Image (cartoon, rainbow, N blue to C red; front, side, top):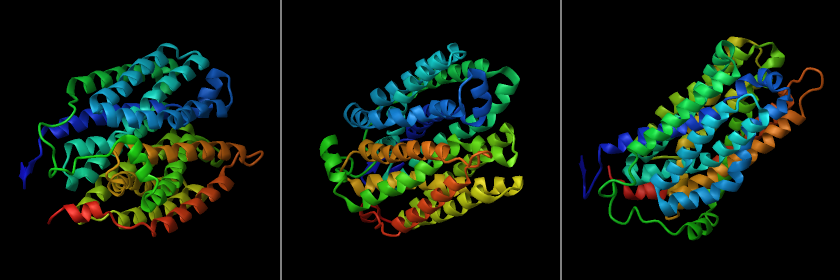
Length: 409
């Protein structure tokens, strides 16, 4: 496939698929306990918050590992850095299954998996930039985000059924074997870069990591985007972590909670296929970010207030469709407005904001549960207010000049 004075290669899709498999498994291992919080608490004889910490450990670790992981991605490349993450995921994913009966050892395994996570997730825009031309990069980033959502949806919907059928121990062993397979596939398929860059000469050049970090923090659009990710990704992390606790006071079971959470992420899968592609087609980022945040706010209102199961499913789908489709567009927009800062650095900073807010929101939602009923409605109302703030901030973003200035019709 020839394009002007550069070439793109079909192998980019094999590379992307292997990378997506590693992403999906990482997210599957993160979200494992969210839909079975109550059952896991009884199994390990600990509190709901202790089970929440199994998921929250990923966010805590991310705060400390994100910048070093971004540095490794931008310094040593995709195969070494993402390979490190895939190896840690495989090793500790399997150990988690072998140590399944001991809460402390499971938590240690979660931390090991969590250390590997940013080496994988922070490389989404790096893979897109290294292998894809600019007019396909939001689509490639969207597929990377799609893999995140597929891992989460499998974790939310399949985990309750596997637990009921086989028990928590067997469940964790199965997931551990899958994590090893994902690591082997990545090392077998992954290549550092194509024979020639998939873009015009000079467009692939990036500044050094630390210089790029300084440049990023001086860019107003990127700082606004970090605040938007602080809200949006924090809301997603908190809602998925506490999905069972959110719906349990309304009389829904763990399998229904898993379906609600799974449908939310399914909406994100569909949104991640549609909106980033439209963003690439029309060469616009900001209007789609605004649209996504408005739609997500509407869905969150439904999650907060509706008591009908069918309406709750619809609300979850709407929330996921818009909120999760904003992610890949935002990642690519961030890489463009941060140029020439490295993609791993911009990607990592945006994810870092969501991990910090996720910890704050998760602790806050647990602390302010209504006495007696355990309702999380008051906390969800606060999240709605923050989503509205995110919409207002998004209207101040300015379009990416890299996209409009370097792509010809």
